[in-house]
Length: 621
Image 1: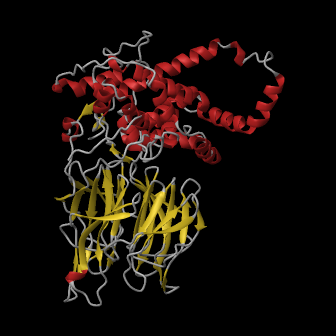
Image 2 (image 1 turned 90 degrees about the vertical axis):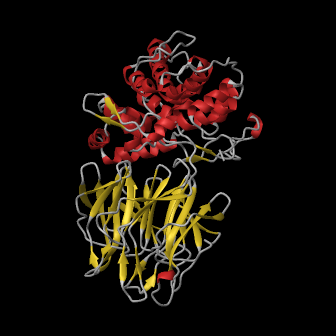
Image 3 (image 1 turned 45 degrees about the horizontal axis):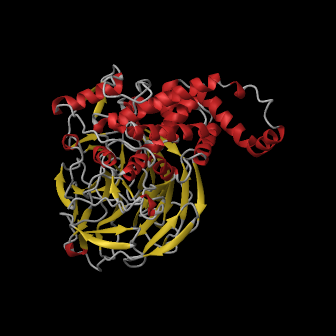
């Protein structure tokens, strides 16, 4: 069963308060970020966030349009923040503390002086920003929301969000941005937050009330008007406060690991009212989509669909997804031509657009995304051989910027992001005449590289992706094709051996979706060129169970392709095969794989005791 908000609300209203835990896990980080932006105090923001969810549950029966839950929730948050601010103005004890026990004051001062100084500096720095920029910066850093997520939430164009984010960063010193990262990381919502909410609301009795839905032709438009203009006709809370003030922010980032003890619950990373594009007047035009119309209807999944060909046939390219678009970068064309070509693919329109060329032509490179920027790293050209060059691409302004070189020149390697940093792993360096074990970490915020613990297995032509903060390196070539899978934990700088991929291969791609990694295509490494060496096989890896499962084969067997994920679908782009007659076939082919998931998932199993009840959300079959 899909965890669409209405389904969960239905469960809550019919005697299953535990279902509210999924709604808490889904929105708690965004609400917390929103509260901090308004209040400027982490501790109080946590208290306000707790009160928001408690009040929302208590008044859940008053919500007429279940699908607008998120907009209603943010209005409650806005009202609670305003109430908190009013209360603080009335509290004289914040200014007059002489009646407090001096020993307690002294102890508190000693224990929290440095933390308070850090938080105060951060608060002062944020206060110099315009409110719009401050809110976006806070949603980005503490809410973990990317440009497109904030755009969809606020109904503002991605370019405006990116511009305001840039303006906010420019007004803050670099060391302040570093401090912001550190401070926000230290002030995440406390462990057990969701559990505490559930235990609290169990004491609250709510009476079921069937939803009075609007006609379909009016529901989305009306929802947008309600969200943006604050026409909260469906709101009727116990204390007669009208939750209408402030911005209405949409669905925040869904955490990969939640606190709710069910086996698996898939949550869409697209708000119900998505596909909104700014028309420059503060409102938005609505582009209806099938997904919105069906409100998260179940998908069969494990199917392939042909999409529009990429304009430039190539292999040894790299692709990255940013703001709902996929960028195909560099590579090699037929005739050993090394490319600087960048082409943008829009899955919604199924169209390609030419973008600004990468400054350094190269193939066999790797790209990764941090904070909406694409970093093209390393690679190969015919003159300089292996490269260490790093160039940053900003899709919003279509511009490239030179960054600090990677310490180890290499090609046929992989990069993967974790916790805002990029990890370059393995590869080939001709000077050393060997596959590499080198792991180097790049911090884009500091434009700095750091050497990390070497990978246990030397290899090139492998692939990797990140699940729940850990990186899984799959297959590759180490004097022969290998099936080795190794897990890297950046937090501990440790490597662990995992279950081998069933099909040993190199030149594959690996893409993570909803906590699973899909190993796609590749080459079994025959001694002579042969079309039979190239694979269409797809194998799915579950890091939790450490097991592999066969999936539907890709229609076009190939290697040296690239793949990227958007909204639960994987787009496999380009590639090549070398025939027995030594004729090379270079592909412009794009094939879309539907995993049957929404692109993000929460694995709650075993996170907390099952005293909440034996709740099991089963998937539709």
